[in-house]
Structures are given as structure tokens and as C-alpha cells.
Image 1: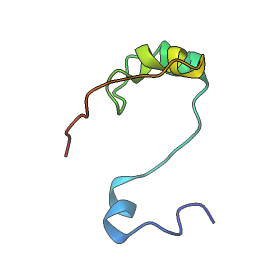
Image 2: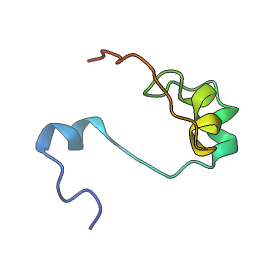
Image 3: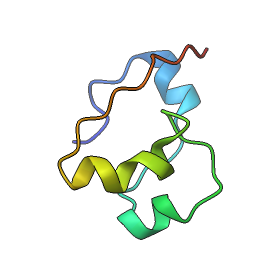
Length: 58
């Protein structure tokens, strides 16, 4: 079952998930990780190598 490998604190933090169509990601103003995912996704799917710095978050 999906989610069986989660640790206890993950069950507290993650309430729902779904696959997003590319057009929803690229047109969204929601917060993503990496933060520039909407801008980079099309280029990545077209086969371009993406060289972005690591992002720190907590």
C-alpha cells in the first residue's frame, strides 16, 4: 500500500498526494520543491540537463 514505508512524523506532515499534470505544475503559483520547478519542468522533460544549485529547507 502507498505510504506504508513512512515513518511516524511523515504521517503527521503529509496529508494527501497526487500526480500533477505538467500543465498544472507549469501554470501554478503553489510552492514546489525545488522552488523553480514550474519554470524548469518543461526544459527537463525536453531532455535538457538542468544545473541548479541545491536548495536548503526545513
